[in-house]
Image (cartoon, rainbow, N blue to C red; front, side):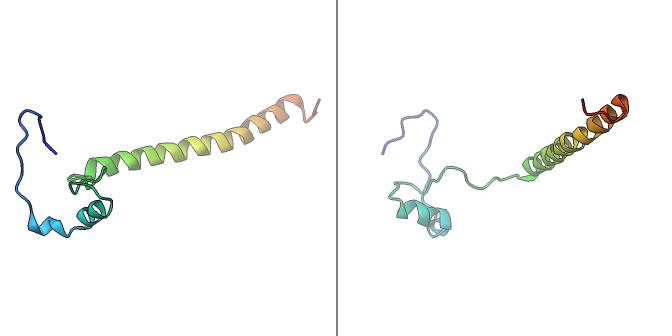
Length: 85
């Protein structure tokens, strides 16, 4: 397999990474290189912080949907005097 992209240099093999779990899985799949989409994030801090932020936002939205129905029901019951129709 040739790499015709400009600026890409062929890296020497890394003996320590040859037996890494990613390299073994790639060889088991018959890939030419030990590359599997995904991988390890070198700086997971910002991604984890964003995940926590969106997790809190998700919980807030679910809680507002759940309890919003109760609040609307109570307000309608008070406004109509408890009559169903």
